[in-house]
Amino acid sequence: MSRVFVGYEQFGIEGVNEEFIHFVFDVVLSLTTKKGDSEVGVALVTNEQMKKMNHRYRGKDATTNVLSFVNTEIPDLPTEEVDNYLGDIYISYPVLDAEADQLEISHKERFAQLLTHGLLHLVGFDHTNKSDTKEMEDLEDQIVQMAI
Image 1 (cartoon, rainbow, N blue to C red):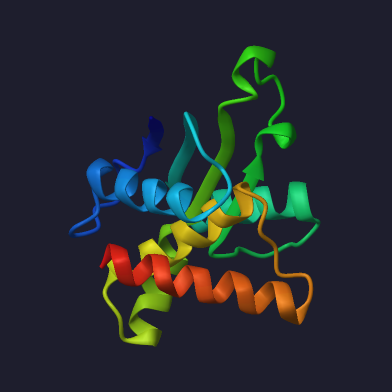
Image 2 (image 1 turned 60 degrees about the horizontal axis):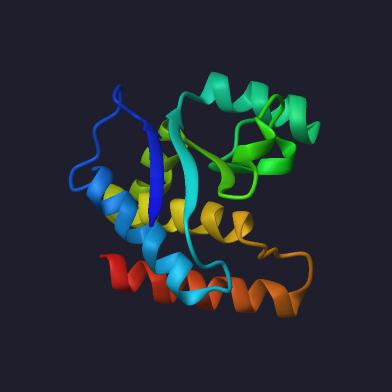
């Protein structure tokens, strides 16, 4: 069973609720090698919050659309929770809002894209070379199409 801890009350995205987030999470788990009981944290944050995290953890003094932190990168996580807890995903609502408008897609679809991207990082995908990038982007597209 998958569990998602959600923190996004201050931002409302039409069509996005815990059920939708669980669905996307379950699709990611079903299409990847990460099986079994898994948990993840998801939060929508402000640009200021995202900029602070991006500076602290990536050394970049700018906001970004999504950051994901694998469980081993989370300080003070109890040892017994490490096996099931994949990590945390932070999505900047203002960036999501601007990107959805720029891409001329719904906020729900952009949220699904960013959530999927973050989840794929948590289960081990990366985009450090062209081959990995293509594989990750293809899987992202497949998952988002299933979700929307």
